[in-house]
Length: 76
Image (cartoon, rainbow, N blue to C red):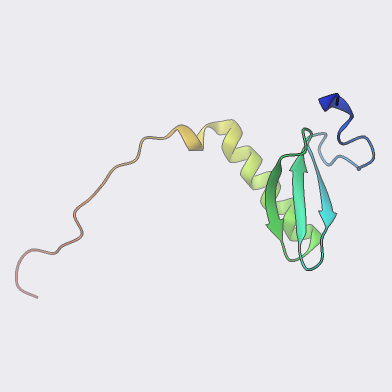
């Protein structure tokens, strides 16, 4: 199947993703049909997907993580 034709029957939002209603939730999918975000309402799903895609575009998933000690020294 040609990946460019996966989302032809859906209305693309921002030319990047589409949302569809499932039984209880709304789900967003990218142009290739990969799931992105789920939400209780259509509008919340759209807002969350835009936030998620903006973060991915800016490279939030490539940030190095740091570990900190979770104990407090001294007398409380």
